[in-house]
Every structure is written in C-alpha cells, then in structure tokens.
Amino acid sequence: MKLASKNIVYGLLILFFLAAAYSALLSTAQEIKELSLSDLVAKVNNEEVQEIVVEGSDLKITAKDGTHYISKKEEQSSLTETLTNFGVPKEKLLSFTHVEKNPSGFLFWLGALLPTIITIIFILGFIWFMGRQVQRSNVQALGFGQSRARIIAPDNVKQRTTFKDVAGVDEAKEELREIVEFLKNPKRFLEIGARIPRGVLLMGAPGTGKTLLAKAVAGEAGVPFFQMSASEFVEMFVGVGASRVRDLFKIAKKSAPSIIFIDEIDAIGRHRGAGMGGGHDEREQTLNQILVEMDGFDTSDQVIVMAATNRPDVLDPALLRPGRFDRRVVLDLPDIKQREAILMIHSRQKPLAKNVRLRRVAERTPGFSGADLENLVNEAAILTARSLRKEITEDDLVKSIDKVILGPERKSLVITPEEKKISAYHEAGHALVAASLPHADPVHKVTVISRGRALGYTLKLPTYDRHLYSRSHFLDELAVSLGGYAAEDIVFGELTTGAADDLRKATAIARDLVQRYGMSKKIGPVTFGEQNELVFLGKELGVERNYSDETAALIDREVSSFMKKAFDTAKKIVKERRDKLDEIAHRLIEKETIERDEFAQIVGMA
Image (cartoon, rainbow, N blue to C red; front, side, top):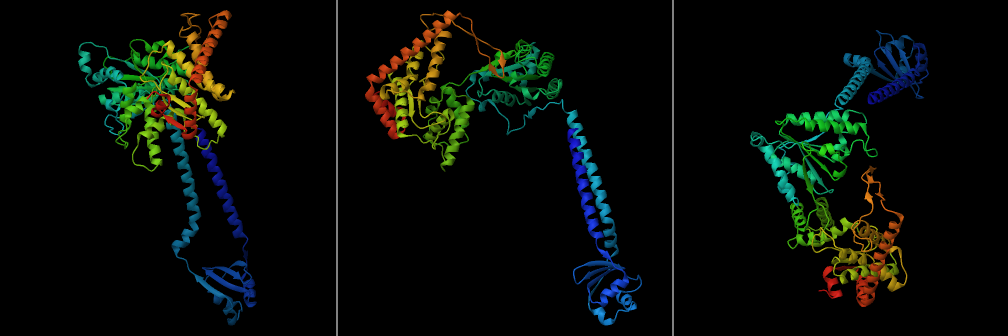
C-alpha cells in the first residue's frame, strides 16, 4: 500500500511537469504577432520582409530583423495574386523569398491529432502501471505467510552434494547413513513396525560442516532438499512465522520423500518463558507450530527434519524429546588425519605443486574447522595468483595459515630499531622457555613481522591432538606465556606494554586452574562459580558467585601464586640460557623469521 501511494505521487508530479511544459510552449506560440493583409502589404512595400512560407491559407512571415509574424491569405488565390490585388508592385514581389508547402492529408491530420494521441497513451500507460503495482502488492500481501525455503532438486547436478564431498566427520556420516537408507527404502522399515525418525539435530562448532552434511544426506538419498534459516520464519507480525512453518511442511509432504533443513534453529528454538532472551510472542508461536508439525507426522510421511545449531544448551526441551529431534549428531573439530582429508577435498580443483605435503600443513592447523581449512586453501590460491604463478606451493599454504590466524602482514607499519629489538627479545623469550620445558608445545615458528595487532608472535603447535590437559602442561604453558615478560625484565631492566595480552591469557589460565579444574593443592578438588545460561544480546551474563569473601581471597592468592611461580621459572630459564636468547634475538633482528628446523639447531634440539 505504501508503494502504491508513492507511485501515485510520482505520477501526479509527472503530469504536473508535462502540463507546465505544455503551457510554456503554448505561451511561446501565443507570443507570435498576427498581421493583417494590409500590414503585410505595407511591410512588403517597405522591403522589411525576408521570407514568407505558405501552408494552405496560413502565412508564416520572417522579417529581416528576425521577428516572426503570422497572417492569412485568400483561400482561392495564391500569395502573388493576393499581394498584387492589394497593389504590391511586381518588383517588390522579388524582394523576399517565397516558399510554398503543401502538406499531405496524413501529415496534416497527424499533426492535428498527435498531441491528443500522446496524451491518451500516457494516461493509459499510467493507469496500467498503477494497476500492476497494486496487483504486485496484493500478491506480496497474499504470499506474506508463504514459505521462503530454497529448494535443491535431486536432479540438480551442479548443486548436488554427496558424502564424498564431506571429510572429517566419519562417525557423523555413519550415523546418517541410516537416514539415507530410510529415505531410499522406507518400506523395509515400515514392514517390521520401526518408527520413522522425525528429526536429526546436528550440533557442533561453527564451520564444522553441519549444512554441508545435511545437503550430502539429501544428495545420497536423491530426494528434494528444502533449506531455510530459522530467522527467516520470524517477522514483526505475530502469526507469520507459524504460517510459513505450515506452508513449508505442506510443500515438503507433497514432495515426500524429502528433507527439511532449518539452519541455526536456536534463533526460534530457545527456551520458552525464559525471561531475558525469551518471551517473544512471534518466536514462541513459530516454535509451537514446529513442535505441532513434527509431532503430527503420520508414520507414512517420509519427511525428515534436520536442524543445525552451535548452541544446543539453549534449546527448548520440547524440541529434544523423543519423537521430535531424537537423533543428535555431534560434529567435532577435525583431528590431524581429518584435516588432511579436508585439505585434499578443497584442493582437488586447484593446481598444487607436486612437492606439497598436506600432512605438514595439517600439523600446523590444530583447532581449524572445515570452513577455516577451505579459507586457508582459498587464501593460498589468491596469494599464488597475485604472484603471477601457476601452482600453489607449500610455502603459500604456510603463509596463509598465519594470515587466517592473525591477519595480513602489516608491511606499512614502521617501527624503530629499539622497538624491533625489544620485540625480538620478547619473542625469543617465549620460544626459549617453550623449548626448555618438557610439557610445553613445540615451537614451529618465531617472527617479528607484524600481523594484525601483534608486533610479532611465536607459533607453538602440539605434536598430536589433545583431548585431556594435565596440570604440568598448564604450568609449563604459564611459564611460556611469561617468557617474553621475563626476557624484557632481564635484558632491558624495563617492561613494556607488549606483554599485556600475555598477562591476560596467563591470568585466565591460572584462574581456571583454581576455579574450574581443581588443580590447586591448597584449595583442593572444588570448583567455584557457576556459568549462567541466561542469554542477553547473544552473550552470557557472567559467572554466578557461590563462595564467600574468604574463599575469594584464597582464590586470588592461589592465582597470584601460580603466576609468580611461572614467572620465576621463566626468569630462571632466560638467565641460564642467556647466550641462546641473544642468538635467537639477533637472528630475528637479522632475518625477522625463524622456522622450526632452524630454531631447533639454535637451541640444540636438532
């Protein structure tokens, strides 16, 4: 309605401007002075006329001074006869140019009717345009509650995804093969009275491949795939989301067997009546409609609902009960073998050099998700194209790892030689302490090249994927975090702000040792503080304090004790191996980057 009103205003403005233009032209035409025949004869006798154009009985006169006049002659006589009858001498008739124009009947009528025809066409066009806008508005209004799901047909070869295109989630694929078997041959399950799975909830960190895996299930089963984000159900008008849910399930049932995939279902599936983060009428009505649709399936309905979320803890319990999302598939971050397989998939269509070792790249990417690895390979391809080369090398992939983790190199950043020296000793302190402690992760790279907000960094990577962390590991990592702080203190006798982020991370580790992991010998196996699950603006409100002030003081003393012991350990290593510290720092000042093999030779670990 608002769009139609706007178009009406635009149409009226156009009509106003056309009317104004027509009035201006008409007033211009009316300014031409009309002469009588006697006045025309007088001007001809005075030789003031330059040209006379005859169009039927109309005369268009142009004077020698540029003035234009109009006049009329006798119908049955020519201009020469008319002027002669009025007493104009024959020699005067040669003083001006005489032009005869005899327009055809078609041109005459066209000139007479053209303004009227143009006006009628414009009015009819305006009416047609306004009617079309109103019709479109009516269609949008009628389709407001219809589903906006994107459909991938089983015969769409370009968009079809299978399990071969998914790596790193072997257990999840095995769990979902049962769903594929049901969609391919539901009769075998129904004959023995097996209950059809209603919903499958894919849970995992962002980028682990939840959407890709859902598409692969549809591709393997060869059924239509209806994809829709949960946020697309919700509108400002109450009831629209529920209407779209009904429409989506209606379409999916008509196309059965089929798969409905709802991405980020936590947008509408949060706890109902939870106060902050809940209490949204439209969202709750949409969730209620999904619950009704899933619970109302007949055993003959061959429709599977798949959903993805990285926040299963905030979902309403009614969604997770048996009969709805009773199948839950967890997708973890890939380990080293899975990362290598994912890299192979994403590099299939890219020209890799023959000597590229994807295993070596996988070793340097712990904690990377599938999306991170895809981005890594893409960044390496961009770097190769920028360098005008035809093959992606292992060095391109390694550089892309640093870019994905920390950001691009800040080549334009200018630092003084003194700041570069401080940064070199700072990073050398981290690396030397890490190489000297048995439970710390090995050093893979040390550099003073600025990336992101860091003036330099030390890349430490575990030799294998860890799932359990020991107290000894945390204590060594605390000392490594304070290695740069200790190096600055010993070498320069002065501290800088470069260690601020190290101190923040180290303090967080020390507090977790005391409050979460029960690794403090003085306090013992107790955890303090409970995580609040209420969500506000997408973030946790904080930790609920469930301990006394005396315990809080004891926790602070234990955290401080862990930090001081780690700092003493780091200072002791830096003092005892000062010659290695100087060698690493001088090499960094000279070359800016030290890789793993070279670093091992310097510290005597080769």
